[in-house]
Image (cartoon, rainbow, N blue to C red; front, side, top):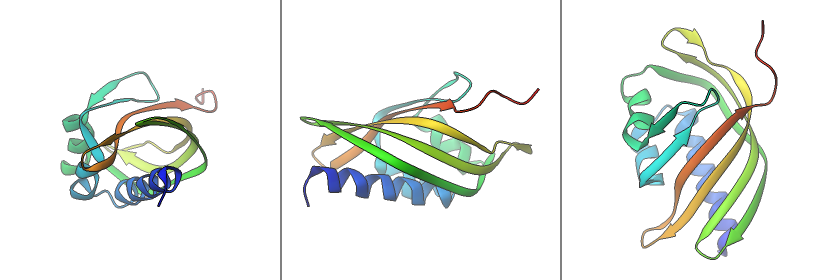
Length: 126
């Protein structure tokens, strides 16, 4: 399997873990220094990202990634895609469509996600 296929497989595993609300499946996919920037500008480290699922504060009913564009740069990959979700966070609707940037790096244990940045694709409802 060459690098684009490995990145595609990593994305598939990530989507399955997020869709399944499964922190145990998600944890090994993230680097120790993983950082995410949410659609409203908040920043979460790896433990905060996982805790949303452990505490069941975040529940995905549907989660998908569409049209990923993968660019490789030696031991790093940049993926830009469209992500959709039907979700609930602390009792509030967290559904939406986002433009995502995923940064993956190659480590001794294989490709892992080092960062995610989400941007809403439409203006928030009034």
